[in-house]
Length: 187
Image (cartoon, rainbow, N blue to C red; front, top):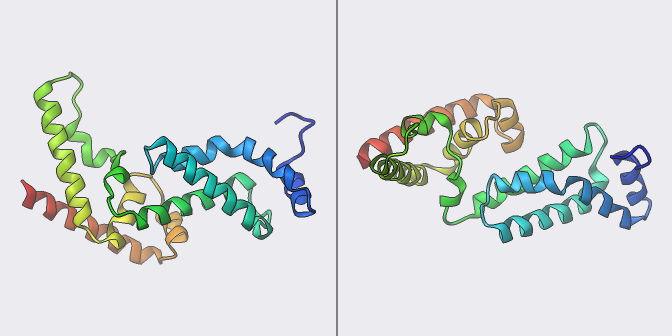
């Protein structure tokens, strides 16, 4: 942001005072942030663009609720993240959701030297993992993925899902247990 550019707070105040064209400035500043968040949940470029557009519309509609207690970028990130979580919940086929697996799940699948046999074995293991994750109840798998794939704290997950931290710890524990059982049954 140049020194002559208005701050986010000033831009928001002007938008709320009726200068709706100023919203383009916020969109320009935060397009890459929104694309980054959506890109964690979707691989298809057209879907990423569509979801990002939806997020900016939602942000514009909810702009009067922005209370300036945190940076606008943080508020927008949370809104984008929640939108993506809602999208994931509605999705019928969850295969794209697992494009980035946590190190804990795939550490034994990585090898420093390329080997066609090991690549095929890794793909099979990853496929089994995806199938196992699909068998787990969403109320268990969602916090598990948020914790280990996204690296979120229980406190952040609690705020996002509106579930007490203690309950989340139990759900993550059960998800790990169910995941292990499902993987063992698949082998």
